[in-house]
Structure formats: C-alpha cells, structure tokens
Image (cartoon, rainbow over all chains, first blue to last red; front, side):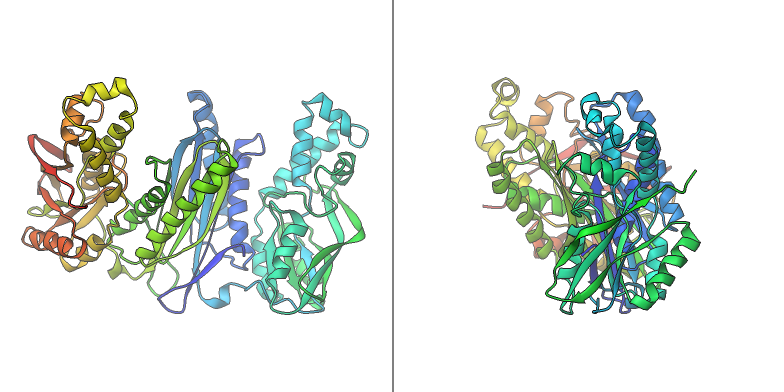
Length: 310
Length: 310
C-alpha cells in the first residue's frame, strides 16, 4: 500500500517508510518544495501515522539551468520542503542532490512506531462510509493555468471559465497540494478508521480500486459524490476525455486521504477536521458487500468547492 | 557523516539512514544494480552498522530507451540490486520508479538499532592506524575501458597498458564495486574501531579530510601507502592531472572503508577480512597529533594490487 511496514528486531516496533519524487508542476519554487514534502508525508498519513521521525530530501538540479536560475530557484525549493517538514513536526536530516536534465524533487519519510500508531488499510466493513479530505481537480487546475498562455488550448475552455476562475482554481490547487493530511491521520485513530489511502497519480477511482483490493472482508466501494475545485468539472468536460476527472481517473498531486470510517463517526470526523484545519471533508461513498470492486455511480453529484482562502 | 543518526522516541533506539543515487558507469546492467546497492549500503557499514532493516530502490528509467531496451535492461538492474540486498541479509521493500532523460539508480538504506550497534566516526586517537578495505582506481579502470573504443584517447595510454590489462582492471573494478563492506563493519566492533568513512566521489584524500575534521581529538591523518588496481597508477600518470589518483582525489564508486583502528589490532583486522571475504585490506597511514588535517606524503608507496579472482 502507501508505505512499507517492516517489523523490527527491537521492542515490537515497526519501520514505516515511503518515498516519492517527481517533476515540478507549479511555477512557484517555494510552493513546489512544500508540495513535494506534503506529497511524501501523505503516504505516512494514509497509514494513520501522525509522527514522522526523519525525512531525506532527494533533489535533481537541472543541468540546463543557468547558474543564476539555479541559485535563485533551488534554495526556494529546499526551504519550502524544509518549512513544511517543520510544520509537520519533523526534520530533514540527510538526502542527496545530483545534476539531471530535468529538475526533480522528492524525499523519503520514515517513522519507527509501535503497532498502535499505524492503521492497517484493510479492515473496512459493510456499512462504513468513504470520506475524502481534499477536493479533486488539482491537475485540471494546473493545466488550465498553463493554457492561459496557450491561445489554442485556452480557446477550448474559455466558454466555460474566466481567467479569474482559472487563476483562483490554480491558487486553490497550490494551497491544497501543500496542505498536510496530518490532522486526518490523527483523527483516523479517534474515529476508528478501518483503512485509508492517499489520492495521487491514479486518481480517486484508481486509488479506491487499489484500496478495495487490499480489504480482508468481501466489500465493494460505491462513490456517489465528487467534490471538485470550483469550475474544474466544467473545464474537464470541455476537454472531452482528456482528464477523466468525472470518471475518477484524473491524476492528483498530494491529494486528500480516502478513508473508510464507521458511518456513525464520519460526520464528527469531518467536523473535527474543519475545526482544526479550516478545511472541508466530504462523505463521498459507501462500503457495501461485494467482491472488492470500486465504482462511481452513473451520475455522481459534483460538489463545486469554492475556495475559502483569501 | 555518511549516514544520519536520529534518536528515536522508543527504547533508546536510533534511526540510522542514508540515501544515494547516481548514473550507470558500467555496461553490465546486472552488475550496475549490484554496484548501486553496495554503494548505498556502504554508508551504513561506515558507521559500523552490519544489519540493514530495509532498503528502498530509486529508479529513473530513461525515456530515450526503446521499449525493447527498457524491458531488457531494467529487470537486470533491479535483480542485481535485489540480489545484493539479499546477500547483505536485507530486503528491498518499497521504492519509486519514474521516467527521466537519464537512467538513474539508487536507494535508501535504513537501520533501527541501539547505540552499541553503530560506531560514531569521531573517536580516533594518536597512535591509531588507517586501514583501507578496497584498492583505489575504479574510476580510472572504468574510463580506460571506455577508451578501448576511442582511438584518440586510447593512444594516450597504450604505451603503459595493454588491452588485456585494461579488461582485467575493469573486471576487477566491477567486482570490487559490487562487494559489500559488511565484513569490515562487523569487524570494526571486534577490533574496537574509532571511526570510519567510505571512499566515494571525493576520493581517498577528500573523504579522509572530511573524516579527520569530524574528530573529537586533535589529530591528523598521514597516508603513506596507496593500494591501486594493477596498472591503473600508470594509466593515471599517463593522463597528467586528469584523475588526481596519486594525489588522492580520483573518484571511487562503492569504494572501501577507511577505518581508524588501534595499531595493535589492525593486522588482525586485515587478516580476518581476508579470511572471510578473500579480499585484501591495507594499513595505509597513521593518526598523529595535529589540527585535523589529512595528507598523503610526498612519495607514497604505490601498491599494485593484482586481481585474485579468476
């Protein structure tokens, strides 16, 4: 699943560890550093681990950058990564930097903990509900924002969104991608979560399918609601089959957690997250009896999520 | 130093962790996988850690390879990496693969252990000797081997080596780079080592300088002997200042450990390694009173190391 769990030789402890690296997708290097850090940590949070003991940073500096570009951009990336690690209550101690044609940024997150500090992802039961902690549409927003400078592509979507809509969606996407899923990890314990995963490159349904295949019980996931960054569902529709957002396959970066929670506790879970993080979560589906399939219903309700940040 | 050491929240344990990745340097993908694995683990062994609890593999697959090249080469790299991890008594559980212009291969090695399982590198005392567990010259051998196909460069060295010499040195370099420094790590405990580092990109003297700067006592390192893969000293000399091998700065990949050992125990240490691994080690220098400098004497003794393997 999202992190590997290795039983250790000492004290009944386990090593929970994950790595991720990718290429920049936003044009603000400081935010890019934060997003990379949030993305790495998210794999731990999906296991209900709220304390990361160490991070390593993995950096590939592009050999096609000028000295000036490099000296300007790279410190911002590093500082963004480190600042978010600090916000997560951990540190970056160690890592590696190499020259590479493409700029790359990623890391490793490691925790050593007793079994009660992590939550196995495979214990969903019939009657659970599925909660999602961030809206979908980050990739759509990032791409639409790039198209502001590409008239041919912009023409495909200009009938459904304004430049202001796209700018706002892009800012919201950056904000969301750089948010930690840490509060959700903590509350998974309080509200007896039965398993979770984080939504990234395979999209909501891709990761839901992966999670349901790891269930011990004979269950299926049915998704009814799709919270989406405002206007991005319209953009995705205007682009035909390009994103597959409403089909559940649009890639997300540093997306939300998809969590199986007892039905009677889910509303309190969402309320607590909103109280602590000022961020909405949504009950998007249910766990039913079945043969480990996940699906989105034919006409899901699309929830337009309007940015709350200034 | 070579690995980060993080005190943990549980049981007086520490997290010892390192990462490394680089680009291929030999043309045998299986050996390249082994070399990458040995290189990552070497940072743990330099801390006297002989048990690795988990490895992650970091792979960048070149987008310039054809499907056929990729499907042929990548499994060999992965298997080489995994096989050597198994030889080291550990496993590869987790990792990340991305597409990248350049092929990259590396990993993360992690151990959780009590303080008596690792050896702080900074406790050398006057009277210690310096032991090196692999000969120098891997980069010279790899480059000379490439020059077999580049007549202009080959002409610079053909007066001092034969094609057979170069082929033999290259095979020996591959063998050495893929050897684990694990026996040395184990014997560092038995023979009361006062600190160590592994020799990689900065060369013998570069890493010796780094190690001496981390010493608690006011000591200096003086190096008298340079064990070098047979004929590679002559090749380096014929290339002028290109490699800086005899000056101590020729890069090594997955080189030996440089270990500070009590003088009276060093010979037994070398004998034990040879007994277990069939690999020679050398006493190459001494620890003297000083202000944390490392140097190679004016006319060091170059020890021609003839391959023992068939």
